[in-house]
Length: 334
Image (cartoon, rainbow, N blue to C red; front, side):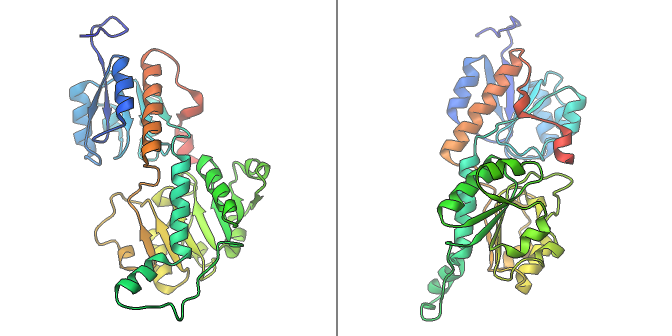
């Protein structure tokens, strides 16, 4: 057995809340005397906690499922938690902080992938791909009456201008869209990139053809898009959410789609994941749904796992956590 760097003879252990990560990340961890164990995605918290306690894990790489106080406190050896991605709303940051356990994010690892998915969903909605597909397969031929919409000159509103928002803005501009950004924390960044900004979300909504969400889920952004704000949008407008499900009031969205208040929506994330089989959104032909995979491509998955692995190795080797990647309870209360 290879001896651990601290001379204890015990190889360090991490638990991944999924059945796999990129092999390159597993190899990297193994090369630094760290063994990798897995816990199926969305296992109940008590099951994950029991697994963590049994293994006496030194670190956790979080992909899916809720990381509660019970999970965080299960192993007395736990020294660091790292997200295989950037969203940390499924981790109890306060519980981790109370125990002195840093929570780190794999910053910048999937920005391009999520932006591509957001644009793909917007294309499906604006070009009405889903209803046209259903019509043709159902024996209809709507060509004589169909008039499509243009991307050229359409106005895309972005809520959030981090790495994903920035990539989405660039792609939208390349397609000929006008981009306007609402981000109270980064208006200067958008302006420096040459994009218009809107300090007031409600003032921005009536002008949009597409609303694309790229902000974190915090106490301030939960149900940010509610019935009142949906009613401010054009009846021809569409919404794309590749951020976090709780940002949209799903019941209000279902009502708006049913009533034709907006023309369509595409969701890659939901308030509860996986969503219930009887979710009322499923009945609506103007709703496009994907299973929170916007950031999951071969390239981004490898990058997320490798960045997360390097964070784990660094902390377990005794280095301070990277401040740029550190997640704090205030991040979810902003």
